[in-house]
Image (cartoon, rainbow, N blue to C red):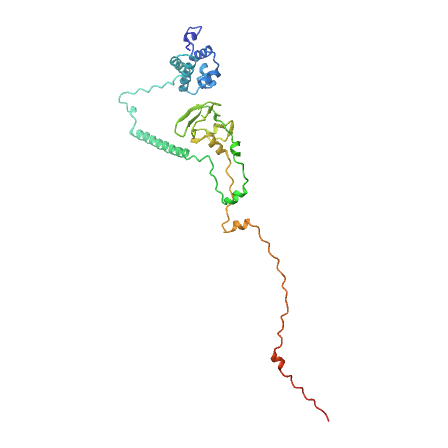
Length: 331
C-alpha cells in the first residue's frame, strides 16, 4: 500500500507537515490503531506515540528515532528514506547540536600555541595511568562475571547413606515433575531502557535490545540452553509458565552467560537439600547407636556353705586308746 505524501501538507501554509504528523496521518488512513501498529512493528505504543508527537525526549536516542521511523513508514506505506530525512530535520530543530566555541586566535609564532614539554609529559602520563586503570577494571569485571557461581546448588553427599535412605520418606516417582510448572520463559523489564542479550549454547544470538518499562520477551521454545547477559538483573523479572521465579541477582551487577532455560530456573529456585549429621569416628559407634541396649542381669545372691570336715582315717581308728591311770587303792 502506497500513500500520497502530498495529502499530509499543512492546510494553512501549504508546507509539508512534520514527519510525526505524516506518520500519524498515514496510520489513520490505513485504519490502524497504535496497539495494532505496535503488534505489527514490535515497537511499544509509548514510543510510537512519541514519534507521532515529535516528543524526542521520550525516545531512547537518535539511532532509535531513525530506526523506529523507518519501520513505521514501511508499515503504513510511506517512503522510509524520505521519512527518515524529514525526521532527521525535525530532530535537529528540536535538539540542535551544541555549538563548538571558536578557538582563540593566536599570532604566528606565539609560544602559547605550542604546549610546553612538561605539560605534554604530564598529559601523556595521565592518559597512561587512565588506560592502565581501565584495563585493570575491565579484567576484574570480566573475571567476576565469568566466575559467576553456579545457580544450581551442589548436592550435599550424605554421611550415612544407608541410614539416610531408610529414614527419608519415600516419594512417589514423578510427583515433583508433575508439580513443576511448564510453559514459556518470559522476561519482563521493570525499568526503562533495560538492555539484555540472549544467546543459545552454540553462541547464536537470539535477541539484543533495550526493553522499555513493562516490555516482555518470550524465549523461543526450541532455544538450546539459552543464556542471558544484562547489567541490571535485579530489574529483570522472570516467569516460567506464568509462575514467578527468583531473580538472577538482587543487586545491580553485570551478569554474563547465566542459564535461563525452564529447567535451570526451576532448579535454581529449589531449596538446598538438608545435610545429615556426620558419622561417628569411633568404629562400631553407628551400629551401637542403632542396636537396642541389652538388659543387664541382676546379680545373683551368694550363698555361703560350711566346708565339710574330713572323716577320720583308718590309722586314727586303729590307734590304741590311752591307758587308764591305775587308781590307788587304799588298804
